[in-house]
Amino acid sequence: MEAKSTLSRQQYEEKISHTTADLPFALHRLSYPAGTDILFYQHWHKEFEFIMVTDGLLELTIESRPHVLQAGEGAFINASFSHSGRNAGTGSCSFTALDFSYELLDENPHSHFSRKYINPVLEGYLLFPEAVHLPENTVVPPVDTAIPAGAAPGYPEHSAAESQLPQDFSSLLPDSSWQSKLLFTLTEIESCTDDMLSKRELFLKSRIYLLWELLFQQAQPGGSGNRQERHNRERLSPVLSYIREHFSEELSLAQLANIAALSEGRFCRIFRETMNQTPFQYIMHYRVMQSCSLLTETDLPIGEIALRSGFNNISYYNKTFLKQIGCTPKHYRTYTVFGTSG
Image (cartoon, rainbow, N blue to C red):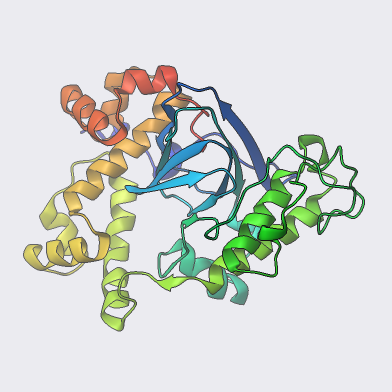
């Protein structure tokens, strides 16, 4: 492949900004009528994301792991994790997505706070729970029933018109399980109307910190969490960085094994054990995800996008894309719902 077709990873990242200079977070409220199947196709972005279902059933797939969420339930999506959503019920489906960058928690990635609480999550050494389900026997009241003014924690100045929290949310008050606390906090955030976001910035930031604390307390070590697992991840780190910077070029197994200073056989075994997929599968998945941004954010011909994403054969690109995303590149470009943000 010619050098001019090689682009850096940053050029392939999602172009839609989920934050602004004034607000380091964004709320997206999406509603889909009955009969809608695909709500958003597989994509990824560099921000963290919380999703809370407000109506219907949502099947959220994160890195090939499916989670079915009902109204009142939510999920956490780590930065750069691919995810997709479809309607899991027969009726309408609505959800709210909260996106925020790690800079909201701490702008300095080298600070003690970042090294202890953020970087381990970003790097996969700590795994947060993804799906957060309602406690058993919980009855979810209608989400559009306003509570009396001042009844919601953190909203002492809000009128009933400004707050859309349920009237009886006693089952989700923050004095029970961590799941209830987290879902109640998401509901507080979801109740903020768009015109109130800038006025409630301190409140929203405090609630995002609370969400992070609740998940951090439930975090589990990535992989087996033992010394060998950490050693394998560290050994593969330069390989993954190389793939991300050179994914549009021809990559050989010998080349990647040499970066890790391993034989090809041992490299493949360690990679599969650590990443739960072969090097080839990882590369193909990464190339397809990069092509998604080009499909939605440029007018380049699909053949050129295939080439720039590391596919020399457009037929193979179409076949691989269909297998991973569930539709053709042309369909994805034309009918992607929710842009490429999720």
